[in-house]
Image (cartoon, rainbow, N blue to C red; front, side):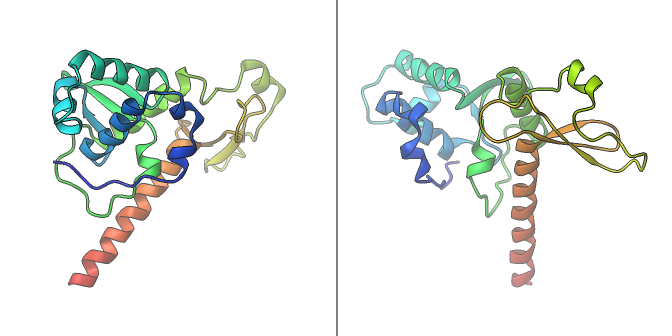
Length: 199
């Protein structure tokens, strides 16, 4: 089922997107409408053509080329879940506010977050501290309380610095995932308030 989605003004100013063909950009916007509330949709060019370009004389091979362009530019991530091929919209959860969650979900949120985090790590969006940095003591060490701590990396790629929160079990949670989780938490809180106002 198609959903109403938001296009932020920054979309039109994105230099990476501006280099793509106009129809590839339109396809990208269309994926937002047909993705589930976690930003995942079937990686099916025939289905995407029928939903997004029903009246256009565009071949399936062209749709596939545009999908490849969006994947190559980091807008979409290919993944497989329960034996089916999907596309995950990498920044969907950051840019879309879901007011009323749909019952139909292609991929559960924890799996989507894992796919995004793995992509970010393998594509240089996030980097792990090197062994040398750890030996030099860059970042905060556990103070023995077992509570969460933050570590800052000096070797962060250009852009904002990377902050990681270490959980009690030592699993790192990237800042991007922290933002997504916080956004989802706020949205769930809004939903609870809306439900309470109807009671």
